[in-house]
Length: 193
Image (tube, rainbow, N blue to C red; front, side, top):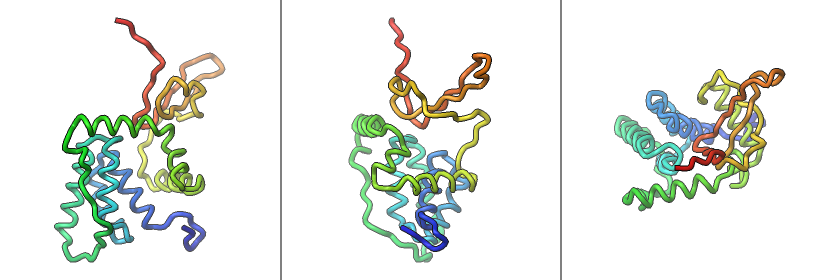
């Protein structure tokens, strides 16, 4: 995975991550040129299809289908670009049954304790994950917030997924900002009736 200039991630890998990031945000305007750039850097058509179809569990079907539609538009507009098709892609069978698709999405979400840690568990190094997060942030592909993110939530046992706490006025016992990673759920409160 080492590349010139000592980078851990290749331009191809970065291109795929940018497309996934913009798809997750629903930013179709920026997704189209990012897709062309990624395809030029060696990302295959089927890798994009696979990424967009796998992300449905986190972003919902509309964003997955919209991204696949943009990909179709890009391919139709540039039929002779020479982009690689890659390994064959098949439409997930679960998409034909809304209940099965929902159940699979819930199962996948609850099995991931933390997306960054999950990426390490799947064989990436912590350095690669950190580099990718820094790259997406510095290049302006992540969403910005005026609220501080804080540290990992010490009450994590009450959450499914990762959350963070940032005291806003710790000296005076003021409010605390809680940041949720996508699809994180809070199981803290119990409402009777």
